[in-house]
Figure 1: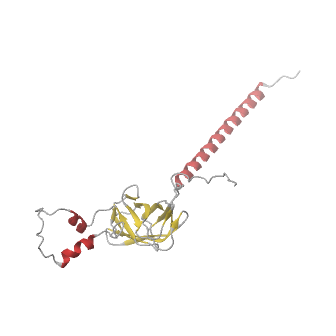
Figure 2: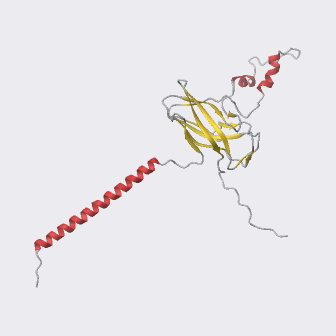
Figure 3: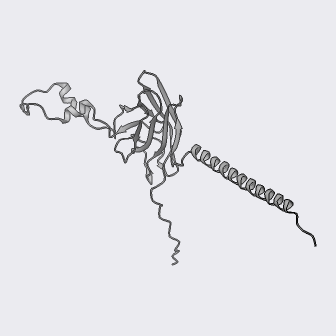
Length: 234
């Protein structure tokens, strides 16, 4: 009959316990490293958005979620709304001062009324009317025609963006950019406005630009109905 050596048994238990502790520590370390990697990856991911995301040439202005508002079709000569969000990451105030496109002139819709138009719309201080026999000057006669609306918005684009601020120019917000009269072919789903260039002017007078070669039309908010699969036979 063989007796076990107490010292040997104790040594074996000590080694086993040490091995288990080492394995547990290794597992925790691997889990921590894996978790840290996931956090870093999440922090550096760019959220998926349906529109164009691009920065200015100097890297200080960010255009996000740039799209053409959805429509089944924009016919030639129609107004085409543009939705964009502009972020000012510089150290000074910046102003959007112009937008151009090969697809037509771009205007600002829903902004402040021009001073001349606002003055013409306001009643006179006296509230009196001129006598019917009064001869109007040529400038007075031409004023109504000059102030008649000829476009969807104003070609005088001036949108101020404060430091670390954002300008939301979307049809939903009430103030947005638009191609006034679409040129060329009609615009349908899957098509894009061509060569849209945004010009920004800083408080110190310097300028920078954002160029979008193709500004796509967004997808509809709700899926379009599927065509019927029923075939009618005569």
